Image (cartoon, rainbow, N blue to C red; front, side, top):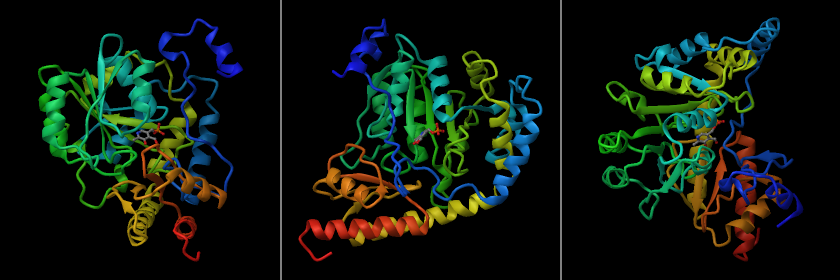
Length: 372
Ligand SMILES: Cc1ncc(COP(=O)(O)O)c(C=O)c1O
């Protein structure tokens, strides 16, 4: 054990935090960052200008606490989502991680459980642990798929208080059919299970992919979580949100800290929502780069998973960590998600994507003893 950890553990820490190190992907200073599924296209100039004006206006009122109910932002988010939603259906926080944490604070806690289906977003078990909620590891098929039948059976048997369904799933990038959501919701009827569909990457799905938002009417235990960190290129602004029945937003009001969304965050998010045309054009470009990665990796003999997100999970590597390191040596940071034979890469700009593909092809050729 290192000195720092030893000193930490001498404190009267909660038992479930002992021995832990903080979660986080490496933040390295390299030219091409394709490791945490950020929007690689930056904030378009007109959005940047609108944010600057809005933040300057908000700065004039920073001596006052912000609108605790962030009503204007909830109205704008409801308008963006459509599906007949209004501000009473919407809640937001500092990133969807905080929204998920608030859901666990409200509906999880000691003596309660949350079910996830790994490989999935690695924050789910950590958020469960942080709220003293038991985390149950659900089972997927060998190809990482999750059928309605299997998911519903597991929910019926395990009776969790909360289920995490990630669609498209991180790290695999593959979407879930709405039949899975419907079946899980129905299976959770007896145990009154809260069903969270994490749609952080929904905007990158292929055209015509339906959202779980369509299932909200009449399902008061269903929550659809979204974020402005990805499609809206605002990872640094920290704004995540969810849509659900109004009583769910009331439940989250019970656990939120007063004034948790700063006036600067509210102003930034509103400005981006109001100027989203250029942002959505970048989403289309990212989707093209994503599809290009899938077809190029297949051509190289690798096994990319179908992706409805802004990243690609691919298998067929003998030594993924070595490939990860060699890419890094070339200035390209991608993600080793710790799954044998696999790596995950975020779709970059056209130039970044070309740099990744060129470097990878060279590495694979040199590993196979072929001329690079
Ligand atoms: C599936 C999924 N959900 C939620 C998040 C959290 O995003 P944020 O807290 O930035 O909204 C991420 C971030 O990468 C994610 O991959």
